[in-house]
Image (cartoon, rainbow, N blue to C red; front, side):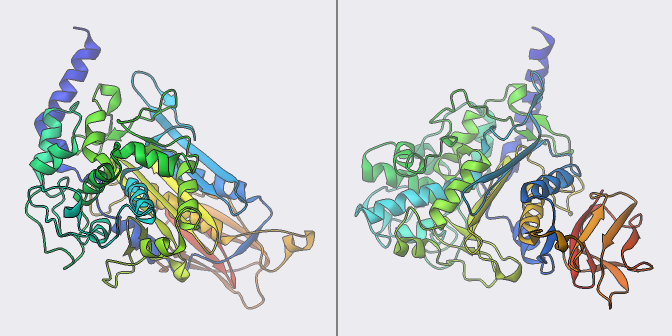
Length: 495
């Protein structure tokens, strides 16, 4: 046996013995961390002019923040109001058997964003008269252990069914995956063997459960007589011309490049190229099933979000049902029928979803801006300050930085505006020890101030010269800051 095969077998043995997949959260609820980051940034939207193009500003923002994190790869796309795209990638798509650089064409798992596709498909079937939202699932499918037949379609799609989450509330599913990682799971295996007793009676509360969307897949098959993934393709993927979206492993991407995922399998902060060591990914994707097995690119995600939440596929009344808040807990995070809305500065409306199946993704549409943004990473690490192995920045931070850059951008439209009172230039940006701020400050401005993204004052420095101020950054930790002089502000990334 050659050394490479020995190494792969040893790594797989470590992975299986540790039952790592029974310990990891797979397809977790909408990210509370992302919700908090977006919701607690009230001071970050402050329009400033720039003589750079929007594409150049987004490039610089993406490059600056991704340079501050060890995450293996990021892919991002923005669908602009005129229908054009900004796209950018950074990092590696794989390291084994050889290093391959990541491109904007590489596919990654979207995780629970898959739920929005499945919910949309069922809602289209509602529009076509196959069923009604307040029908019970027992009219069409089952029975299954610990699944009440009286649960309605509406309760299923909105996570108000009370059903136990077979992935995150029953360790046995992760253990079974670890014991036979190449096994292709069926709906019946999941529903008959891994759903524990319900958490509450249908309609009594809200609790995110992947079991809901496995049942949604079963419903699609029962109603149409076709495989669920074929129906999703016919009703959503093909009509929206999503040429880079596949329902894996039930569909394969052919010659399109599929980025490997890097995972911290031993919990020590060091990631391993999962597919590169020979781990079969088809098992984990089939276990996620209709709750989260789709793969795609950020550009396809932006198209999908704009077409759905821009009102181009579903009827207006159906979309309204989809965007009803069924959590109703006052947190600001809303969840409808397979659709989430996160609290944002200035009550900026947004709809979409995030996802986590080792790969991490977030994709939102902003109706008032007619803009969609999506970011993916092929690395299971995240920014979690309470975790000693946490990285400094993850896909949520990249998403937020790009959103800030877009919302703050205003192009210079005339020569005189370059020297107008509202122009500011930070150099270098990102910066290490010092940043030079060139501007024309207001007459009343006597100091430059720095705030973090939570609006906390981090530093104030007296302005000695009306046009130039040098700010010492040596005492500040790495991160994103807002520099303010008078009514002007600009974002700074400190390495």
